[in-house]
Length: 90
Image (cartoon, rainbow, N blue to C red; front, side, top):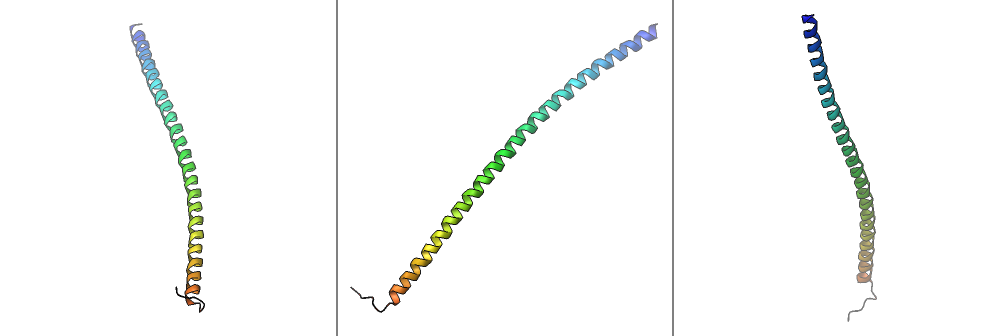
């Protein structure tokens, strides 16, 4: 009987150790899930920001293209006006 009580005691101690280990792993898992959700949220925010930046870039590019076209038009008009024989000096 003595040996049996010792074995039971060892097994009970091992069960307590395993329960503590399980709780520790569960906390780590929960923390990992929390961090994963936080990172997923950050990825979504960055994706939205990237999309907004792309749209802004496209808008700016269109504006620049339009302004460059106006500059070309004005330069051509100035060149035509300068080379025109009807230009009179004041």
